[in-house]
Length: 180
Image: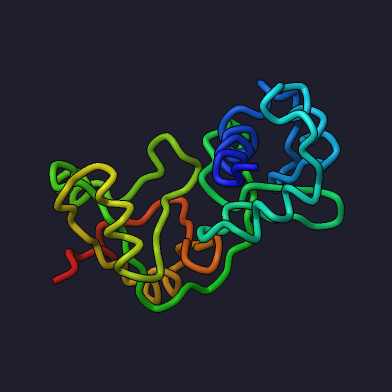
């Protein structure tokens, strides 16, 4: 089984189009595993996928996009569904990073970071992840440094996506600077 392809299919179902799979996410993005498996098994490509396959998919993923708990599964971040997935605020590392295209820097300097077509702004705890993300939009991305400690102290809510990804509703330009 191609667990990378399965991960992409599950991500699409849980992050972007649960209605296409007849799934109903709860307020935290959880859906019963049996519901997801039933939907996947209707497709010829995923006929026979079982919970053990989902466990292996999660274990083999380097990005930790999904979580299984008590018979339910959810995507940890990256949602674009209309209903906001609720997260619990948590103190972030002192500094976070965001990779972006050079053409967007003036708008970011004026307006800060906004979720755009996602529910949250995605930040990373290390520069390399920010570079990788930024390169999706620009071969030489700008890396922004986020003063997360000050933002948190001044009331900006941060949420853990996974061990490398942090989320925020928005980040004001006051907390941003271009990483040298």
